[in-house]
Length: 96
Image: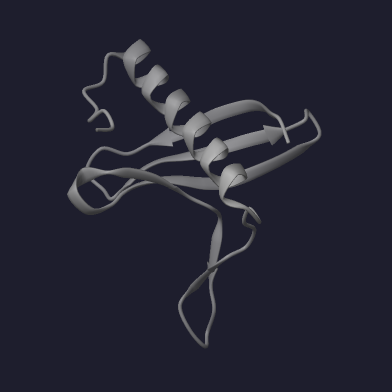
């Protein structure tokens, strides 16, 4: 799987959701509504698109099967988020 495009669609300042993202895979498949979230102690992470069901909590609509794929996706998305922030001169917390 090769991520060929990453778009930071909307950035938020005063929320646990820091941005919404779309990615394109192999120039053939797009995933929308990926979120960059702020977790415990300010650490950012990537949340896949999810849906809330009547019977329970939110559940991911799609997810990676293995750790390496997930880590690769998260690393590339967060890197683009920080690069865009630097271009826009935003004051974002860098990962520790």
